[in-house]
Image (cartoon, rainbow, N blue to C red; front, side):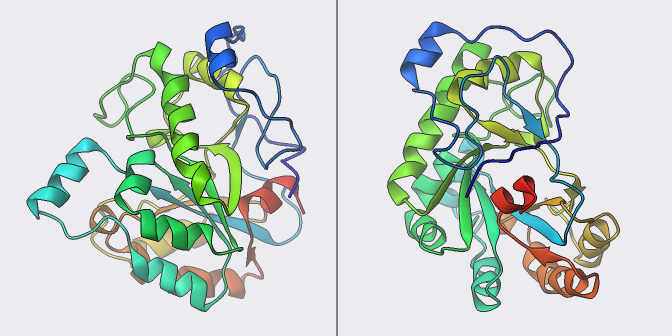
Length: 266
C-alpha cells in the first residue's frame, strides 16, 4: 500500500529543527515507497489526524500499551491479561481490517499474539513506543523520557516488531497523544508519520460499554481514525462495545479499512 499522499497536519507551528546526525546514522531513513507511513527525509515528523473526507472508509486502530507497572501487575497476579483475544476473535470472524499500535514491551510479553496479528493480512502493525513512557511533560502521569532518548526508543520498537513480518508500517502514535515540537523534531530522522486520530473511544478504564459506542458513532465520519485499546485489563469494555460499533458503522454506510488505505483516501 502507498503511504498517505495528503495527510492532514495538526502538529505544532514552531519552527522545525534539523534532525541530529547521530539519530540519522543510527536508524537509516526508509524510502517513501518502502512501507506505509514512511516519509523520507523531513525536518519534523508529520502528524496526521484523519484521512480525506471522501468515500466510506474508516480506520479502526487499537493501542497495545505496556509499562513496567503493568508488567509488575502481571507478575504479581493482580491482573490476568493485557491482551484482549476476544477483540481479535471478533475481527477475524467478521474479517474486519484493523491497525495495531504496539509497544515493544507488549510484543515481548505476548509474542504469540503478535504473531497472530502479523499473520492476518487484514491487520497492519504500527509503533507505540517501547514502554509507553511520555514524550512530553504532564502526560497523564506517565514517566517522561529525555529528548535525546526519544528516537532510540522508537527505533528499538521498530526492531522488536520487524521480525514478526506481516503488514509493517512506519506509523507511530505517542502515548496519550502527547507531543510537542521537540518530540516531532527528534523523530524526524526515523521517517515516521505520527498518527493521532479524530475519534477517541475513551475505552481505558471504562466501566460500561455503551458510552464507548456513543463516543465512536457520534463522531465517526469518512476518513476517520478511531482510537481503541486491546489491553484487556485496562480496557475491559472494548470487546463488548466493538460489535455494536461495527453494527453502527454498517448502518452509516462506513467500512473499516487498513489505516494506510484510509489515510491515502483509497
